[in-house]
Image 1 (cartoon, helix red, strand yellow):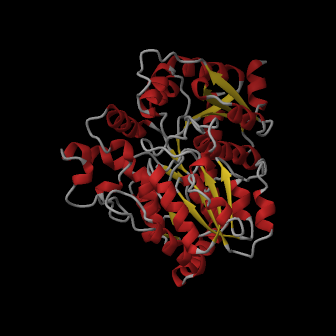
Image 2 (cartoon, helix red, strand yellow):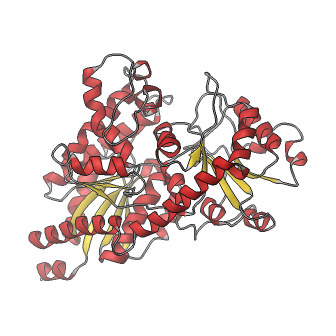
Image 3 (tube, one colour):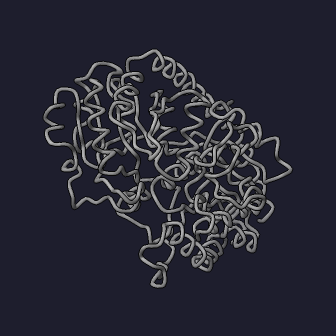
Length: 475
């Protein structure tokens, strides 16, 4: 009787998300597509240590065929409070192995479990799935260039001894632009750090996967995607299944940004936001403010409290007890009230990008924000802060040509004059028209990739068929 029950169930996938909505959202979009287009059901495993009301609300709003399980809380009393987020995450992942094993074993008993898919930091959990004879794939929430970096950096690390910023020549990833050492993933910039050791360990674990799904599409990265397909003997099969980004339907417009945009001319407003974690220094906040003012262009700016120590300070601390607007130059809001809107901490980003008045996006180049901008056909100004964002900026400006990049001083500061110049150029200049044309072409390609005959839909179908067949064999 139990065997007959499993036979009639939908094939089931267990997903595991790294901390942060930026990781959870694209994984959830992947799950929804598998549920709605390929007849799967799914369960999300999440880390209780990083749970939040926002995450809980988001998970409860998903399709009825998608459930969630919170893994037990992991004590971290032995980890210094000053430890980098990578060290905290490493401890939680390694200490969660028995809990993940229990959850997968339980799902295997109660569902027709056909695959386990953690996202990019979950390689230490793949042996658990292998032990339980569950097909195990990775979901890489960033792009093909970043995946190639993950796959090739361990070899460079073995072959060199200097810090990466001091490499005499750029790193030549197949199918990609030459990557200067100064633009590497920031986690590896101190080779002696525990964070670097851990991320290299994660990178090496990718070869334990039976396949890697990537949140990108062929027209976005033609050279890198071709290289990944051509290197199939060197790593697990790669499936380009994106772009997955938020629909924005659940976004709340607390500060009435859309009402303000309704009053602005078409394609006239620059939207400025640095994602869920991006944080500017006090001096850079001031320079950006005066630069926007000097540009004479309309703008909608999501402002966060500055930090002079950590460019990702807002990632797990939104600092809601303090008003970010207090850190703007005296009189800035009043002087710019006729053409600028400033909101604290958060705005409905997808709805703003989709609005006809939005003509550009000054962004930290997080991959989710990048795909949201591409999906809405909005050209960008790149302002990378941390993680792989400098790599993304290189690709967006010099690769696909859908963004402009301000020139920073040697110490990294972008001065107000440079801000004004690049903002005017994007909204009202010839180079701005060029990047707008290219991003509109990429927008069409993104829609095409997910269509029934599109490259991303076909790649996801290949992976889904593998899981389907695997599930039948195990019944």
